Amino acid sequence: ILNKPEEVSVAISKPAEGVTQKVYLAHEEQKVALVRHILGDKDDFQSIIIFCSTKKKVEKLARTLHQKGYACQGISSDYEQEQREEALSDFRSGKIRIMVATDVMSRGIDIKGIDLVINYDV
Image (cartoon, rainbow, N blue to C red):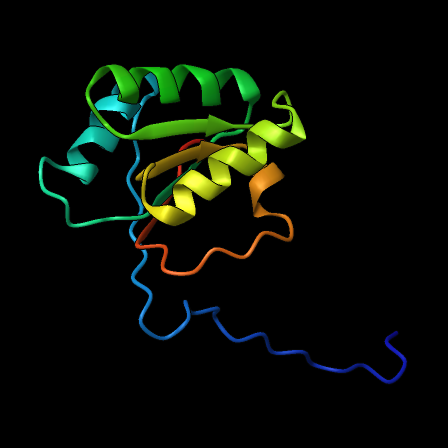
């Protein structure tokens, strides 16, 4: 039945060396509290990116974290190019510690020294 069958083995993918991955399962209403718990009250993480699936969630999470006292900025395609560049500049310089973004930021942008990446709902 099979003509010249071949067996293909795929290795289990592993994170890059020095990268630790954790998975947390949470209901939608628990996610902000979980993010705050991960961030903690300490400054263990100086440069954090949080990815959200929609622009609306970016705005809501960024606003909530900002209200809780975190140096935080949202960024999405709703922002003008100049606003995005200013936010990225502030993030790179450390003025903003947390960037909440849609996948717009993951495309072709090189930011060194990221301590923590959270995939909020993606």
